Length: 220
Image 1: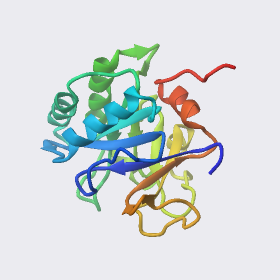
Image 2: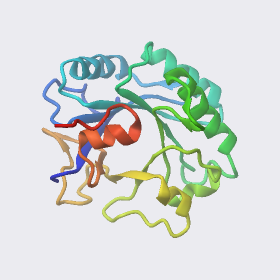
Image 3: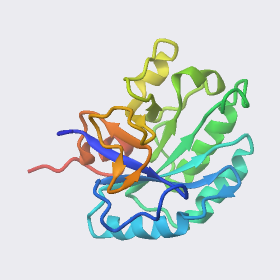
Image 4: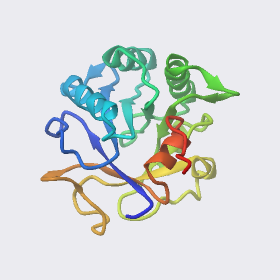
């Protein structure tokens, strides 16, 4: 979609990230709690090459944050090995069908603070190059949202923020499909790979980077 940014989520559930990946951003999984994604090393190497030669404008490295947030953070940082100014951290939070309940803001915010410190600290009180991922219906597990952008999953339709207006104010992109046909007017993956896809509506790749703290908008 013209003027917007599409990007895929890539993990061990997909083939390794290919050199002909067509989008200007990518989101790759580093870990789920203490579990380390089996394809991350290969995907991370490919993403760095594509960032270095300009095929990618930016990359998101995401971790599913569990209540053992220190382990989640340790694995996330160790797997990357280096911070890059064109890469951001995403903290993925979920109730996992009711298995996680109650307010876990301290866990998620601890992870964000640790990742932000590694990536350079804060600008004012805002964490640097970090974002979150949360469903509006899961706001109860993370009611104390940090001042970071959020990707919000909502398959097929725009997110409904009536129960989570603070999340709506931080909304930057929609996770619109799992590759199974939701939003059939938009790509369901890349090449022959069907996968989770996201759209930053109304933001080109450099504008998305400006929001996430990786780039400045080019000036002619």
